[in-house]
Image (tube, rainbow, N blue to C red):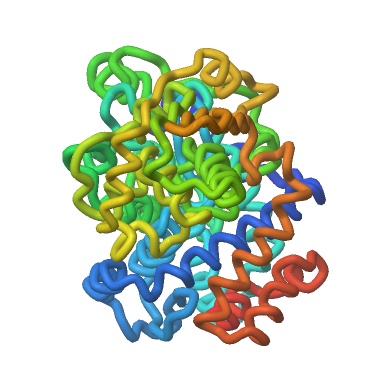
Length: 476
């Protein structure tokens, strides 16, 4: 096996992350905002009781000397546990950045591996008299790992097979951990091949009737597994060069049902430049423009002196993925069920004029008016929105709300194709990201410390020269 070449796709993925090509200033800026946003999401999740309860079980190396730190927490953990906790916190509230294509995903999920390993390696490098990892290196790895994750999503669809998108978190995180650990190219390929032949999660926890909280920790699990496989490789564990291509037993045949994994475009900086941020509402991304329309509906009804009983129907025209993922009727059993229900999110936004993290649980979740409105909502795919969703030059996420009333008021129509967090609304988005971070971080750090961290992260000169362990200490 020593002379066997690794499958070409695996080589391309590793070579991109291991490339010395510097990231562009535009990409580095967006990486800083993605880092800021992800940390804010993690801090907001720290006070969520189910999240806290779960994380309390993942402290097997608590007190480890020179361990990795978790934002907002005081413990030191081994890199695998820290990656799980960071990845889980970032993902828990369904509020971190998003990527939509044939497959759906969240490239910031990989920050579990990136931040945990960068911190752990930096602290141990200092003990050995070596240089710590710089935050410039962290940002470069972010840009490249976002690209690997997102480009794999473009043409490789696993949701049709019932397999969850966190498969790409595990794949991308294995390479991220390898490069930050200082592994050789061959060792990174070994880790990556093991990621591909691993067992892969089913999507059942994202859909009725089984929608549940595993969708909030699945990414943490995957990014931690990527770290574990890189550490195995560092210890000398072998790889599997034809893990993708071997007939019958390889990934392409055994998992991907005879299709060949492929790259949808050259690996450059496309994903970070087009990343989708979630502002200002924590709605599943296919619902973002629908929620924005529902907030406009609330204002319209207030202006006209209307109440929900005056509504006869809300007709939502949406994209095919929204129909697949979040078009949901019937009883909603928990917050995870609600944040994947288009009708629920639209109903709450129409009632309140907003949609917040708290709105996926009581008391609004048990307000009878929500179900009354849900019963009046009808959803249908709009082919134009589906086509524009997949079009490489658009990647829109459109929804149209048409609301008809029992009274003689003219129908209300809100047609929004691009959400605030989309590239075409970037100038509108970035200030809102800062506001979102400040709101999330000030609860944990206080307003002055939060402002100092925000200024540090959004300043290239201040952040890029900082060591990763010093950065993580500021967040602890």
